[in-house]
Length: 281
Picture (cartoon, rainbow, N blue to C red):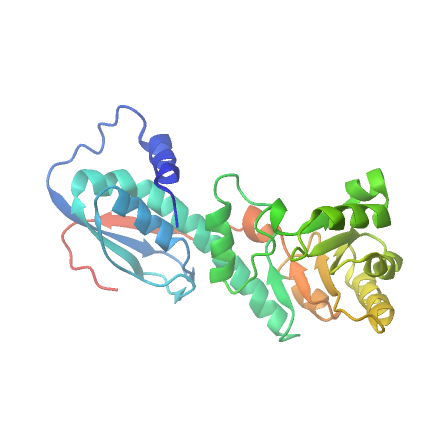
């Protein structure tokens, strides 16, 4: 799934144009070892880095697997020079992605304390150049990707409403979008939830509301859409943390989206070790 050009960019950034530290002769084996409990992710990308360098990937655990500290999650064999060249990029990608997956799993588990139906979703607050890796990590943690890019769904945000007005913005974008494209409308006042639904929203985003305000907006939305011939989803977003997920899950929303899953999740700690020890997963 990763183009060679992206892997080349990662390696060029790390290795530079005159690397001497990795000029090590011979063949070796390498093991990517997790140093703390968490959820594995990004291992397909880490494996792709080694494969690009001509290093054999012996085995790896599946993305989304719960792993304990000390687990070998990826094993490789090949030229010592190329193993060492790929080491840091692979560790960084896997550590970052696994951190996202671990944070997502914690949020999903917190939601399940209250509701079996509410979805935990990422947002478009991703690291430039790493969106694919981060979105897959959210899925590995049990979350939903949300929209992958601007073309994936129409999002009518506060600036659009300020420029065009809510109804006009929805109408304008619906005329220009495919029939298969959903329209989401962001609101900041619970009273605007019915208005967004009547304007044609498929999803109403309840932005930066407290759990109490969110519950009020959901109730108003359900009342307003009772006679509609279509489903309108309610999504809560804005400053929601793993700790506050249960409070929002109890409001009746369909989706809880969290930018923190990708922009603030701490990396899972990994270590990469080389040497001719048996590689066992």
